[in-house]
Length: 318
Image (cartoon, rainbow, N blue to C red; front, side, top):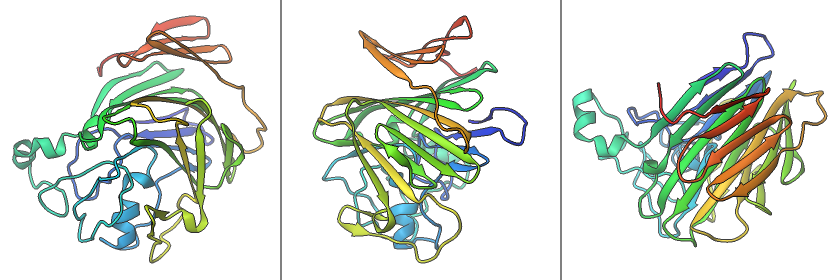
């Protein structure tokens, strides 16, 4: 899904990916999203320093370098990717491709090996002008040994606010879950409210769920380090995120909800309205100004109230 707030030069742009695998150049990034206003604010991590380098296969291609979710099974392993050797466990999405590139040569091969490549689905989509809604099932992109369910729902409230609601259920409560945001510049502020700026653009990040989250900012030498190893790029290939924001629940649980409000503005905007969350049986409601969004916890979909109008969020793709 690609979307924009308007045709104006200061428009906010949004990209979301949640679909099948086809080509060797796809990353382990199901559920990833990008946000741009004046400049890239939320981007893809790492550098394509060369094909199959330690940085390429242990960071640049991996889930850790994208804006999605990690579920870390300490025993998780990965086969080689491209021409490289995978030596670290990032807790991200798996792959079990029969050859190192992970690409198919024609539709017949894709259908024959569908279990390898049919790894995600767009469950719902609608664009109503003042808002856009998309829901995706990211579950099959991860090893079934560690993940039972991961759905991501995003409401783009034009002109610049994104409400991101994730439901993540692991097979073991002890498997740590981490919500990722790749910030083009290190943020300021104190969690759960962070602010990042890049050029003439700014992004306000509000974490509503989990409550009392554990927040880690990976910058500098830590940016490319994890699992006791470090994978710095061999060369700089252009602008890339300088900070990885990691958000985890304070206590282990099989099922966790992540709810974030991200607001893209001009850099001279000092603050945005504070969002609030209310949890009830089977529903989670976020209030932001005059807007109310209610998400179901047993399925995708819910309700939106905005501008004096009330509507049901889509539950399918047109």
